[in-house]
Each structure stands twice: as structure tokens, then as C-alpha cells.
Length: 121
Image 1 (spheres, one colour):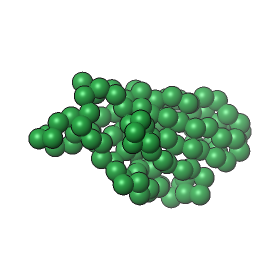
Image 2: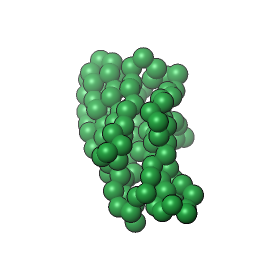
Image 3: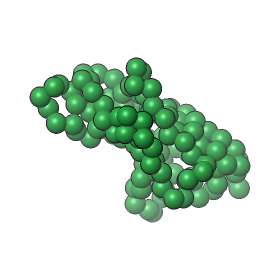
Image 4: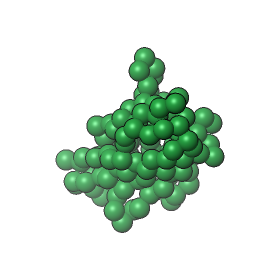
């Protein structure tokens, strides 16, 4: 079994910062891409940022220049540093990882339980 556990969400004022963490644990052979998604009330889940296994990041236009994604492969952990937060960043943030449990399996997508981020104006 594989588990993704997120932490670091909370309530912050506009202009503030938060750092999200997501740690993968369990039967893991390797982790390919790791990503952060978010879902605001009444809206579809959207990709916020992704990082490849070699560390190349990609960002949604709405967060470029404010958010930074990084990973620590030794800890099977991905981070999302969020600066200059805006009320429109309010959402539940989900971690996603493409994980191979064994050498002969293809990567499968796993999701965390989500962490609430609320930005007040």
C-alpha cells in the first residue's frame, strides 16, 4: 500500500505565505512526477504545479512567480511554497504522485487526502 499525507494548510491573510508538504510512504520502488492540484468550491480540480523525477518544474499561469514546487527524493516528499497569497488561492490542495511499487509495474497515480488553504482579504 502507498499513502500520501499532506500538511501545512491553514488560514492566512492576503499577501502571506504557506508551505505545503506531502510525504509518500509504503511500498515504493520509485516516484516519477509529483504534483499539486487544487479545488475551490463549485469549481473543477486544477493543476497548480508539477515537478518531474529529475526536478523540472511546471506551473499554472495563475501561480507563476508566487509558488515554488520542490522535492526531496530521499524523503519521498514534495513541497509547495506559496508566497503573496491571494483570496482566489483559497481551495483544498491535493498532492498527486506517479508511483511504481515494483520494478515490473507501470506507475500509478496516488492522491493525498487534501489540505485546506484559506486566504482572507
